[in-house]
Length: 257
Image (cartoon, rainbow, N blue to C red; front, side, top):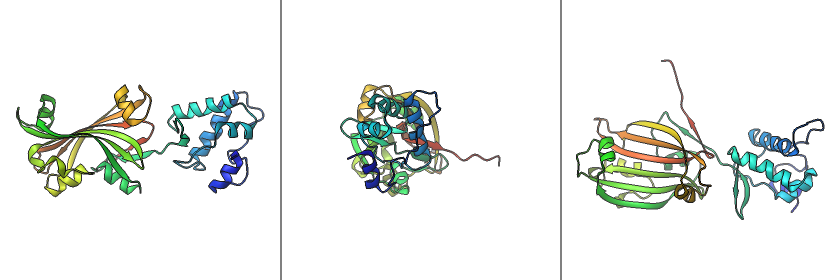
């Protein structure tokens, strides 16, 4: 399938210049010029999130440039988080998710609000004794029982985040109460948090984290530490979440009131 044929099949445009033409008097390298065409198509919405790019050879033939030029342009946008490359699956426009910092919601709720299907791949679901770090966050005494839920959070079959949650043992009847949504399980026992404190910082993914998220080791990510509280002030959740930096935008509304 040629480049223009792929575009016609997608229903986006029937002409071959849907990205626009390479400028005739631009002195930048060809890969930078083509990268700019792709970038503008993505930001303008002509290339939607999840859309697959045609093969490099078709792009090269369409624009009369080398495959190395196309490959360098794609690599630049992949590094900026606009494109996602997977071995054997080609290149797609990155699906970015906006997470709102102004309300407390679970991963499952955020995905459902965006029309995406949330799922999990479990790493650990177990009962145990609180660690010193957990005891400090959850205001628990040494030796207090806790439940831990570690998993890969997935949206539409794409791994988006690693989530490591700890709750006091009294919050749930069993570790098996949690299937997809921790917050749904906590709500069932009247222990869903109504207030939370969050801390965000940039981190590079370790090799183990990168493997679970299907990215390269050292790829930038975002770590969010959340401590959730009940109305009476008791902490009931301590969660460390590692989000893919190429797939998430975090949004907060600020006022001077």
